Amino acid sequence: MAKLWGGRFSKDTNALVDAFNASIEYDKRLYHEDIRGSIAHAHMLAKTGIISQQDGDAIVKGLEKILADIKAGKFKFDVGLEDIHMNVEARLTEAIGKPGERLHTARSRNDQVALDMHMYMKKTVTEVMELLIAFEEALLTLAKKHQKTLMPGYTHLQRAQPITFAHHLLAYFNMLTRDFKRLEGVWEGADIMPLGAGAIAGTTLPIDRFQVAKELNFSQVYGNSMDAVSDRDYVLDFLSAGSLLMMHMSRLSEELCLWSSTEFGFIELDDGFATGSSMMPQKKNPDISELVRGKTGRVYGHLMALMTTLKGLPLAYNKDLQEDKEGFFDAVDTVKFSLTVYRDMLLTMRVNKEKMAAAVHKDFSNATDLADYLVKKGFPFREAHSVVGKCVAYAIEQGKFLPEISLAEYKKFSPLFEADLLEALKPENCVAARTSYGGPAYSQTAKQLVLDKKIVSDQKKVLKKKLKKL
Ligand code: ARG
Image (cartoon, rainbow, N blue to C red; front, side):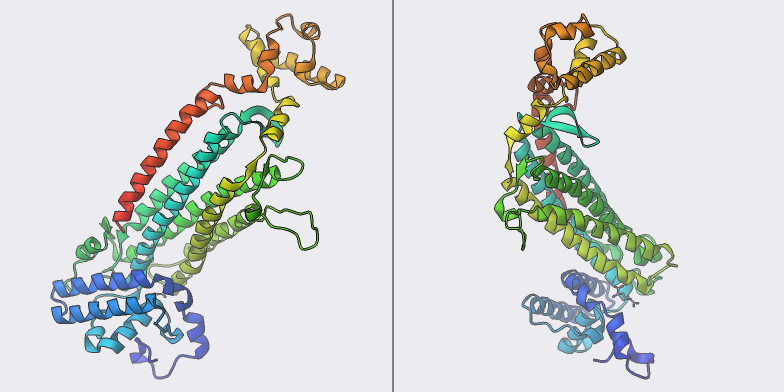
């Protein structure tokens, strides 16, 4: 098909150039935004008298038909028409004739693609928010179930202090609440309307950008036409927020891999969420966790790629900006798919409470509690640390754990030790006593769970508001 910009050219584009230049293969996913944006533009052109009401109506009707055709899979995309914008426009003119040729008045593909991307971003943010909330709720459900499930907390991947599985899970919940806030920030950056910037310098025609913004539910309009067509900060914001979200899931993935190993045995993934080996019949592999961990690098890569694409670009639009799409779309799909499959994997996994508890009963993770015991009796912490360190060394020498040393032996290390030390050493008591704000004590976890539920219900309100502004 002849190019819509073909006027000054005397021969056809080389087929390789068409193939290299085209973005239709991936930007066709913007069809809905593109058509909605064009309808708003046509409404505005008619209202301001730039085109006649009759032409405006014909354009809108034609665009609605194209939208229905695309949805029904009846639209043939043409690589020669480069991108979604020209595919739609060419079809429109083919279908309705002259009025179609007026649609692109006071508009460039530069501000058109920016509009599409802003609209698509707003929709995407709400979709990711919804999935994130569902994931958070899964963590809360699990945490609620495991408020009393003891496990070791690790530092340096060495057993450190007893905690509960709930406390561990709620750490991830807290990370995800920050991810949600970051997504709110992404939304803010996308909620600015770029159309009317034209190719770079606005237009001489009496357009009304605020009318378009109103019809499309944007809170603001770009105040500088050059910024409007060259801004991709909101895409970077998404890739950055998505990278952090993936990183959080990746850290949990690493733990799920460790915990499902025979060495830990803390969890067992449901058969529906694990995979086998083509050679080793006994294997049950945590592929989902590994893939989420692996795909995290891919999302980071998209962030780095776009940062690099943008860093040397002169104002305003450059074709390099077309490179904002594939990585972004891939990141969207990756984040959404990961969140979806992960949630179900978590909700179906089996938690081996006995194994977890055994890991805190047969170890030294209660040593700090013994030091705190001495501190409560007036001993300076540094000295208490040293005394308990000696107790630990002694126990190791005897092949015992702290609760198995007799009071008489303890007395040799400090006269402050009394019979009640045994109670202080019980992991369940160690946890119960960690009542400092944000600590793993059962009482604290119960309070945090109430607060966390409230956070989720507030997030749902935020999401609801945003859904109304799509
Ligand atoms: N497909 C292009 C993109 O995604 C649309 C804008 C093209 N503008 C231009 N002047 N070539 O960036």
